Image 1 (tube, rainbow, N blue to C red):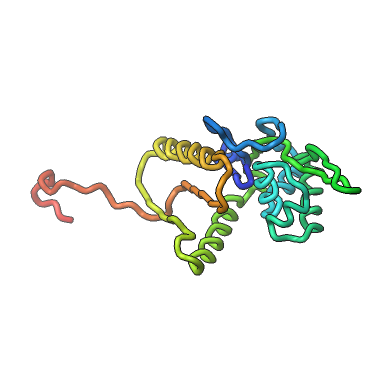
Image 2 (image 1 turned 90 degrees about the vertical axis):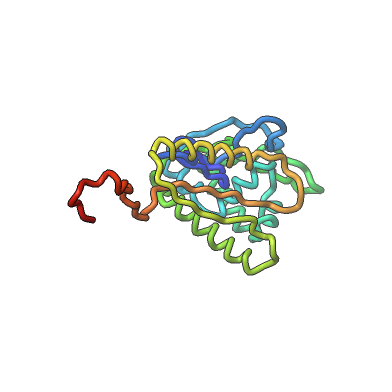
Length: 225
């Protein structure tokens, strides 16, 4: 799985299967890339990395750093949190090797540190703190949609659900297509004044299925149903 916080994608490449990833992905054309150099991917191998990444505020931090390098003050303003809180979370991420200072700038008598991710995509397995990640994503999205639905009209484009009885192989194909679409969405060049969320999920339904319909013409005389 891969996690982009937020993009957190699971299963083999954060987002599909039994492992996942947190990334910024890669798309054709002028994809959104940070203003600093970084490796394409990093596989999480230590419990410390899982504990650091799978926390809501820290996932929002690494997601913002997919756009560009930023100072703690800039991140605090974007997240609406105190600088001390963001600084603490940054230290946790840095100690786990998920972020680092990519450049510094002198501002008056001070030196501003700009932080960036250590990889565009973080690959992980469903172990340790990553367990339950899908449920947390859905719960957070449900809470956000609830707040938006009580606000200005047009804040929510669409939320929908469908169920289909199909072979597992076909479901895997849809999962792959959805994951690719999510990457394309995340890699759009940054512009405009609004930030949008795309969310997808594909899982086995608990709903029962109708039995196969029997053609009445094929019944033998005396059969009863």
